[in-house]
Length: 135
Image 1: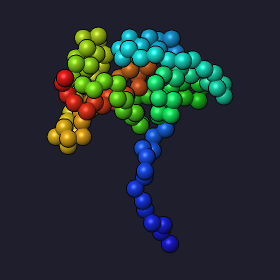
Image 2: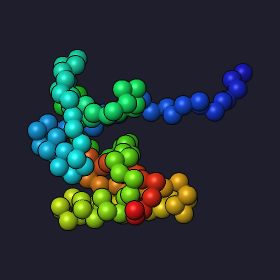
Image 3: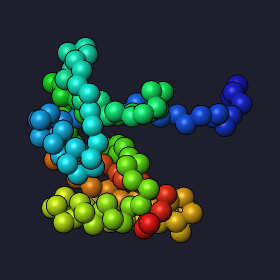
């Protein structure tokens, strides 16, 4: 017997991990390209750099270095909301030599925002999302 399906009351994403081979290099990449800060922590034998947010209950991500995790350009993609306007951020990333794997595209003609995919310093594909294209 199939259970009744329901609409979730909250966003299901609570945590994401981005595998890194070189923690120092990855932190410099994210800090310099996106102007974000991290707090470092060791947990379960993993070196972690956790993205700091003002809201303690907000979903977040961490850069993680561990023998069981390898950076990859294949598989799942995390989409990060790091700016309200995507075009200026992507233009800056391109000027800085960051590889744009998938150029900016409108989601449902922009009704659901805009996204693109970059390749980070570790070779991971990372998605970027913003509600608007330009400010």
